[in-house]
Length: 339
Image (cartoon, rainbow, N blue to C red; front, side, top):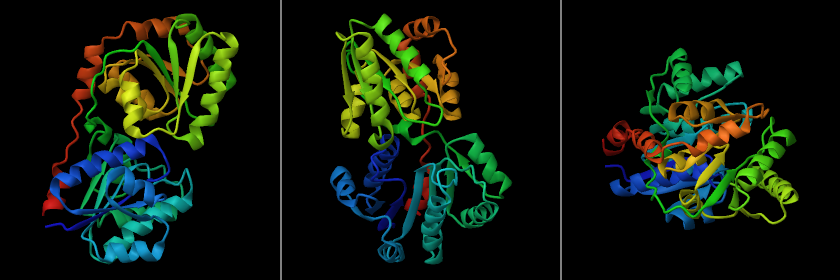
């Protein structure tokens, strides 16, 4: 019986998607019953938020000692094993996995997005290390194909966020805008989006969601200023610094949502909120196409009257049906945990 599980990931940084994945994983583990320890950049907050033990991710001596005294390491979810953000982060997450394997512990790779890995040496070591893991699962076909080329067997699963229990709330007549900074973010998109919102929803409350303040907050505040400059009378607010639970509750009660982040769109779909996806990343484009959501490109070249019209004519029940059709398969993970 598994007595202690260590979870390694991008935790404690205030990122909505990663924290939501962690909450899903912890809920599952608590049903099985092992002691849970999360590696976090903010251990105190992680402990308080999830009622689990937590230590500093970057206290290498303590992390190594913990792994030696544990039974299983779960690495993920999120996009941990890639060197686009930085080679240093890839090396860190590989080190955690390698350390667990060196102590002959079982390792689960949990619904990760793998790659891109541009450094050839890093790519080689990633493949060699993952071959020794007890169970490897990925969240997209691109990751699955990459690991296949590296000789690593993996299981293709949907994103764990689809496992979130989200209540469908009565609509409050509010419009949600979720923005993040990105290399392709530009004023043309912001102004064109603001003009359409002021035109279509001048009588509604506009809620602007910052889901990771370090990345989102500045552009959200900028967008709020643009809207109020176009219509000083329109009611706007920037929602930031909130718990995931509070953010999900706010998003679930929206009438419409325009969102960039993948996980914001998943929450909207599960709650049946009619949405537009802002296509800054291929995973967002793929989700929108599968769910039948209208798309806005970062260059804002579309006819916004048409796009917003498409959003208004979406069928709430079909959106919920799409989200509910995605069932996360826990069987392989449970087998390792209970084995």
